[in-house]
Image (cartoon, rainbow, N blue to C red; front, side, top):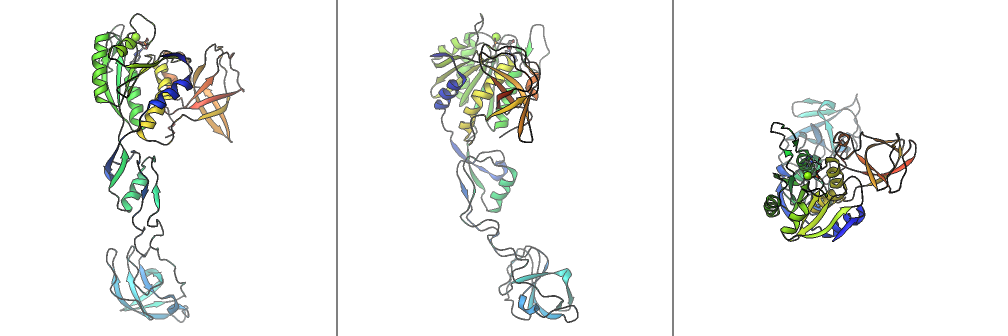
Length: 412
Ligand code: AMP
Ligand code: MG
C-alpha cells in the first residue's frame, strides 16, 4: 500500500484500475444525455427522396425560357401531389404538377415555382418569368448521405442528435450502461436534511453533492444512507453497496481521529488497499481500495475536501466507466485577480472562478478556502494548483489551474 502519494500518481493508479463499462440499447424517448457506445451510420439518405420545399408547381424550366410579364407562358396542371404521396404522372413539356411542401418531385420536373408567383385559371397556370433548372428542389441525401457517420462512439446524445437519429429511423440506440455509484456517508454527527437539526449534529451535504454530480455526469447514484462511526455498521453497509453498485464512495472517517474507522472497515471486508493519503490540501485524508474488481474510495468528510478530491480523482474514473471521450480535467494558465496571503508548504488547491477575456484567462478566488467551507464551491469552475513551497500569491501573477465541472459552468 502506498501512502502520501502525489495527486497524479493517485489518478494514474486508479485509472489503470478502472474497467470499461457495459453496453445496452435505449429507445429514442430515453436517449437524451446517454453516451453512444458505437459509431452510428445512417442507413438511408436524408431526405430519402427529392422533395419540394414549398407549396407550388413542379415543371420543366425550359418551358419558361421566353416568359415575361407581358407574354406569360401558359401550362396545363395534370396532377396534384400532397406530402406523403407519390406522383403518378410524368411532367412533360407544357405541363405542371401542383405540389405541397414536402411532396416528392414528379419525374420529368426540374424546378419548382411558388403558388404566389403564378396565376391559376381552371386547369391552367400562367408564369411571368424564366426559371432556372434545379431551383427550389431539396435533393435526396442533401442533409445526410447513406452510409455517413452521424455521431461517434463516446458522444453525448443531445436533443438535436436524438432528432437526427429519429430522422434516419434509428429507434434502438447503442449506449453505455449507466454506471451505478453507491454513496455512503459515515459519521455520528451526520443527519439527513429532512430531519430536525439537533445539538451537535450537521446535515448531510456530501451525499447530496455527490449524488447530484453523479446524476449530472449521467451516472446512476445509489443512496446508501448514513452510518455511525462503528466498524460493524460500516462493514455491513459497504457489503450491501458493493452488491448494488459498480463503484462505491464513502465520506468521513478516513483521517487520524479516534473514530476514523473507515480504513479498518475496508480491511475487514477483505479489500486490497491501493493507497492512503494524498499529498495535497484539502483532501489529504483519502483511501482507495479494490474488492472483486470494484473500486471503493473513501473521501474525507470535510465538504471542500470531498468535493475537490471527487472532482480531481473520482470524476475521471466515472467518465471512463460511462464511456465518455474526455477524461482528465483540462489544465489552464490564468492571471490571478486577487491575492492569497498564506504560504503553502504542501501542494494546495484553491476554489476559484476563471473567465476568459480577449483570449486571456483571469482567475479569482470564490471565497474562504478552509476545509469546511461549502459556499466557495458554488461559483467555482476551476481549482488553482499552488505548488508545495509557494509563498503568498499576489494579484497579477500567473497561476496554473484545473477546470472542474460541478459549479455553474459545466464542461461536459
Ligand atoms: P471526518 O472526515 O469524519 O474527519 O469529518 C471531517 C469533517 O467533515 C467534520 O467536521 C464532519 O462533521 C464533516 N462531515 C463529515 N461527513 C459529512 C457529511 N456527510 N456532510 C457534511 N459534513 C460532513
Ligand atoms: Mg468523522
